[in-house]
Picture 1 (cartoon, helix red, strand yellow):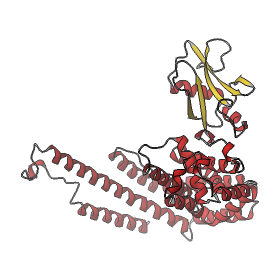
Picture 2 (cartoon, rainbow, N blue to C red):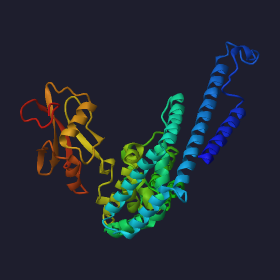
Picture 3 (cartoon, one colour):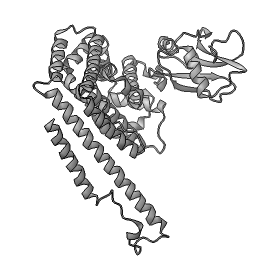
Picture 4 (cartoon, rainbow, N blue to C red):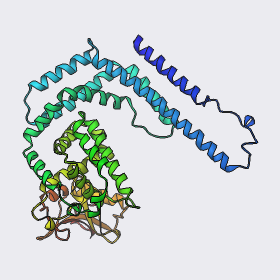
Length: 433
């Protein structure tokens, strides 16, 4: 505790030094002390520039204050996990030993046990050091409130990163081997990826002019995914690759590309990076990341990454010209819905439909999204195939149906339709269900 207090005194001194470097930002000069010869009352441009500078300095100070608190939390957590006599260190070491000695299959059980252990350790450390963590959490929340915005910085975030590092550093290769040995498609993915390295972008739905682009930054970030050890760092590398790809596209196109255009570019980038461990890394992230991390941008692009792996595994290299080009509808977790409803002007729209969502859930989502009036009509989902159209039962998940369709399908013969029906007893989905 004395060492922790010393850390806080040192951090406080650093913050005070920063205050001095910014000319005492907390004590802004009054209007009476301003040099009116340099800033006249009527000079609105000068006032705007001055206001922007003050806001920038304020944001920079808040950011630096947050970094000081994050560093303090990180030092404390690492001290607990590395301390010779700390219960945290002994618990982690015992878990690692037991995991290495246990069965390697099925790998889903191994990864689930690791995820549960990290959750349990985080809760244990919260209970043991609750007073300190609550104080730091309040300080971070105060900074975010003053900045009128949300931040990813939190005690839980730092705890998660530190625990993942402590657990996954000694287990990374073990986990990789567990997944590789059990995934029968791993060798198939690697061999297909090597064959696709020489394919043109147009074979994935892109444009052959993309060959002349400089893909180095995207390739480096994609390869980084397999070199880092923790799932959080892998996800950060993935988002870095996505950011680099968006930057590359924006440097050649005036308008940003949509989701359907982005997926073929991302698949081509994976083939150029020759990310041979992409399938294993995808499984590792899905099963080891905190589910809260997957609810936003991270989950969206991890889904895209997984979809790219699936497209590469099933890509027909012998008859690429006859193969259907990939779209965002191929991403697990998204579904293209075609509309046959007079109050919806769209022909179709790709929506985030989780594999566990039923036909009833999907209808409710569409009704709420488009603010449809259910007083005079009811709605239902239909599966359209070459055999005809079939109305889905309330409990049927439409994603399960899509997974059974052939890869080289035509949207005119295989699709999910949202139809408006005359209100009656045969309606499969309405707001009263």
